[in-house]
Amino acid sequence: MKRPSKLAAGLLGCGVLLLLYHLLGTSEEARKGYPPEPSPLATGGPPAGVPTAGPREPPEKGSRGGADQPPTPRTSKRREHRPAPGSVSDGCMHLAVVACGERLEETLTMLKSAVLFSHKKLCFHIFAAESLKLQFEKGLRAWPKSSSLKFEFQLHPITFSVGDAQEWRKLFKPCAAQRLFLPVLLKDVDSLLYVDTDVLFLRPIDDLWRLLKLFNSTQLAAMAPEHEIPKIGWYSRFARHPFYGQTGVNSGVMLMNLTRIRNAQFKNSMVPTGLAWEEMLYPLFQKYKNYITWGDQDLLNIIFAFNPEMLRLFPCQWNYRPDHCMYGSNCKGAEQEGISILHGNRGVFHDDKQPTFKALYQVIRDYPFEDNLYQSMYYPLQSKFLETVHTLCGRIPQVFLKQIEKTMQRAYERRVIVQVRPRHRL
Image (tube, rainbow, N blue to C red; front, side, top):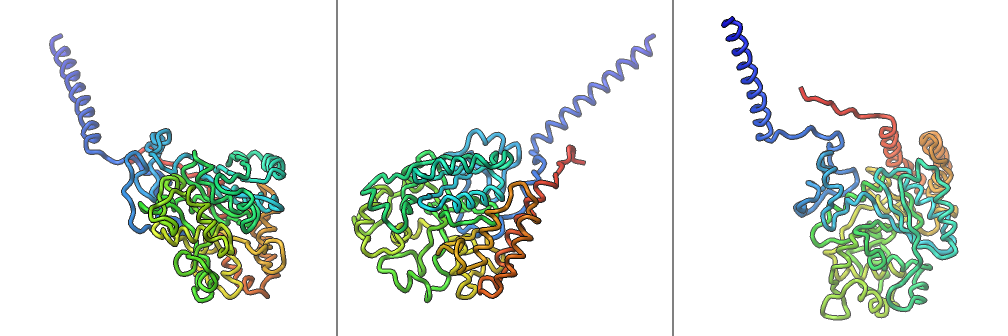
């Protein structure tokens, strides 16, 4: 009986040793800090067409680790409820637009293009004339549930916080000056993308939204140049007031860090000291109102002419206008990567002066939600573009189609292809 007892004791001792070895080995792995499994989303570099960073600030404590690298799933879950102060990762991309007059259909088409292609949730801030509010409410609520889950919206009145409201209303186009007051009116919004009503998104807003993380310590807004060639640009030839850079900037697509704008002191030509955004607007308008042609855009050019370090430029494919093709193709970024945002200024979405712009607008406007993107959008576009080859813009259909084709491919992959993460590492 002694031998079995000794054998049992020996086996028990071996079991205890094996258990201790396993526990110590696990602790040793934890101490060595083996990295967690990589997320399938955390691969690849910055999106095509977004400019690479210049000098980049180190990540804030508690914020995402890198400007272009999404956090791992564990990290994002922990930080989702405690975003860093001034961060843009609040779970929503804020988009603002101002609509007055006959702009209802155009604005809804713009918002539709944003919803169709973007990935992250959108928050729309619609500043509208009183007569349009009910129609906006009705139009947006009529969209199918699968699309309405991708956005929220707020309707705001047209409001000018300083100066004479009637003067502001008459500046350039009705209500256009409203964009100058967004930092003041949207006090709870950290960052925002403002666009004119005559804009169409041909790729996800997410790709431009990431540019906010590339702002250096002084930059608080980003816009595209008004022109690519100084000798034929409007500002370089005709402006009677200060403007940014060699060609000025176009304010139809404007990315803004509102928190920085609210906190900044702006150099100016009126007083030797800096002025806050709100206290600067009306005196600036009074000083230059007899010299400006393009209203609020001119005022923005004047502001950033005195504060160039506060502005970041993004390339022309993010604000592609008829000027980029009607005199010959002069937006190299669009030639290489395709148009990311189409800006149909000069009313070209509705007249026959630039049929390529009009064709794209009509196809997106008429596209039925939840239909096949290739059959109901891409193929009709190809057919319509065949009718525009006699125009200078129509001779480069690949510029108009390249990015939207990529975007459709990405949308298809997100909808159909499911990435399965392995449970165990061998």
